Amino acid sequence: MERTLKLGESIKVGGRFLTLRRITYAGEVSPGVFSIAAEWTEGNNTAAYNLYFRENQGSFPVLGGVLTVLYASQHELRFRYDQRAPRGTAPQR
Image (tube, rainbow, N blue to C red; front, side, top):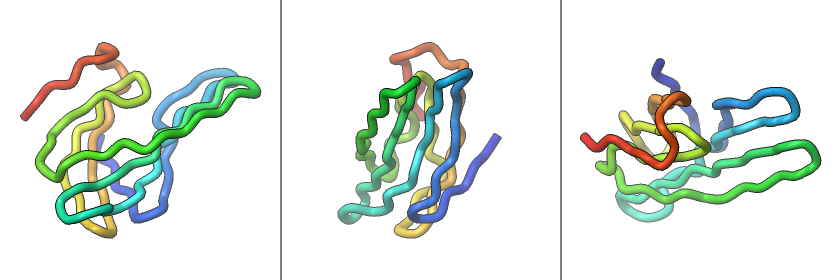
């Protein structure tokens, strides 16, 4: 399923009881390089980090799944997130 995030928007990509995983689009940080903020919360613990990727990178692992970038611009990110993908693997285009 395709998802679209505008700059600064977040979306929940997984989780279960007392666990939350969220992706926020952080925009273009330099020409052709984009960023997402990945956040997970489990009980009273929360962590967040930025991931940087090139416009043509394709797919990469994030938060226990694989995010496939379909389109990225300064103001919008269109992607697919596969939560069932094996952890640590990322198919390339």
